[in-house]
Image (tube, rainbow, N blue to C red; front, side, top):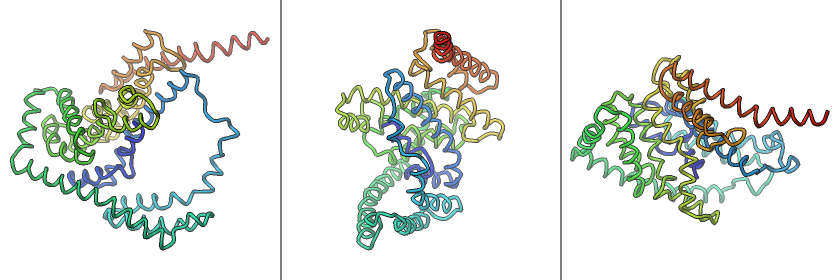
Length: 369
């Protein structure tokens, strides 16, 4: 559930929200996709580490080597399926309109299907017609949502509600940007209970972005904060409809599944704070932005280990506290705090490696000899 939420955050598509963001900010979709890639990859890195730690804790293993197809064989059999996506990205970055890019990608999909060796997978006139019908039916949902969103935006603009809510957030948060982000997160959770993700983002963009701008947050960063937080109702109790669907499929307890989803997806909230306080979206100089990415990378790994209380093995209380301190220090802007946080992480990692990896090997080797 938390991994599927990341599909809305990771380029090249990022759902409809990225195109809406481009319209609202006047920033090209290509630039938005480029700067959004690193945070989204860090989000997936966090989930991957947590899943790995959970698997190690319970002794779970992957498929035997004999049952895993070689990557080369898989790529040789289906490499051409990447062509439509590559064309879509190329045309988007070249500055063509989204409808034109979509048309090119659709045409490429039909043509590429004829490269399949299995004739049943090739798209003939009937398959193309059925795909067009399905696509048209799906677009009706998006169109209806967009129409409702337009009404909401019109009401907000004409009544001055956006300015009033912005003033309310500023007055409640005072001079604290941190509290302002918390208020936006709370508002996104409430809106997410009754609105689709795209609608939630657009409403929050109209209502909350001006408030964040009052604190000096760059426009792109403010929109990314709102865009990311608009996804939180997918896995944050009490709503978390995605988690409830996953629970029904797995036959698990919905409430426990919701809280587990929140544990694995907490990086979404952390990333919103990084957007507000750091240059991870390349809103500063190149040196500042690259350092922000590096410190965020180390902080993400430390945060994941801290959340799971597991690295190479279970962490002791001092190690867990050190990982927590490392996480906070890496996420706080500043070279000195970052260096201290990185040093703490390296120390804990080395101790864990010695305890759970190197020491058993040395003991085993000594026993053999």
